[in-house]
Length: 348
Ligand code: NAP
Ligand code: ZN
Ligand code: ZN
Image: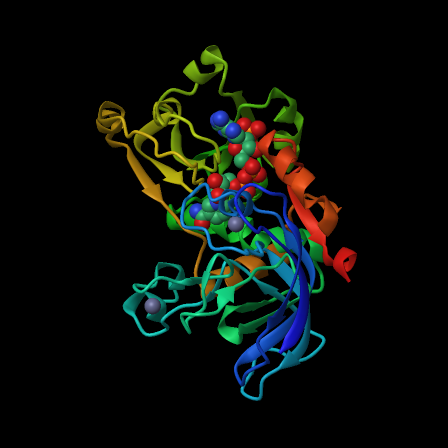
């Protein structure tokens, strides 16, 4: 067993606090990663506070994990001690269903094993995430990281990165596609970077006027303040794709109205409350709404390699583990530029 220090949510209401536990010993197919940085995803907050229901405590959140390999099992082929490595939102799946065979493990027919807030496949051990000093994971769910990239900026790629890369690829975004990204937070800022890197014409849809200059610096060509009706009017029926990363409860109407003929709104944000689907707005312009969850193991590695080639990392604010509760409060005020990343040296 591997002694691990962490921060955990003990229930939905009290602040996260120190928690010590043991990781499993390294098995033949496992990789042990000493965690150096872990991103803070809005999903961590939703789950720590049980906003989606069914949370399991104590819960060590964190699924944007990067670090250094310290040990590998005897059958591991992809890694050796000293390599940089990442772990994302999944740590296992059934491995035999149709979806797993297509490397779409996030849609495993039996359900994927999340990095935290669920049970491991033994049905007993609570999976614990990256607000911790060590993780032990089967190598299929461990990714190689180029030493060329700034490591703390890589951490958010493991969730926010793949969650925006995958649906933009799936929607066929390419040179000239008119893409809007709704919500300039952790996901949104990487969505803008990817859409711009794919050659799209990118528009930021934001509720924060103060983020306009940043949006443009990140690669957006246009900025629309969605609380301003006049600005919205100019983009009625305009976009081929809207990537909706909004974390708070909101109505879909505003965004659907902006979709062109056959336009698609891709939902990646998971607000606590379900939104209504306005039928009239969907019939108009033959619009559609689709959802997308992270990305599979092969696509996650592809995304990381793309980032190494194009020098894409997240814009981060480094925090100590002890600052996590304040970081959650700031995230709720949309006051993040554009991802908090925990420096795990603060726990050692
Ligand atoms: P985040 O950093 O908090 O960003 C969310 C952004 O939403 C905010 O920065 C804000 O941008 C915008 N926003 C906030 N309140 C709003 C409102 N009332 N109306 C419109 N926009 C509003 O969160 P994140 O980490 O990027 O995560 C975003 C969502 O994606 C979360 O719900 C998370 O759980 C979910 N998620 C899903 C997946 C998946 O696999 N599908 C993976 C990861 C995360 P502006 O200031 O620009 O308006
Ligand atoms: Zn996440
Ligand atoms: Zn499966």
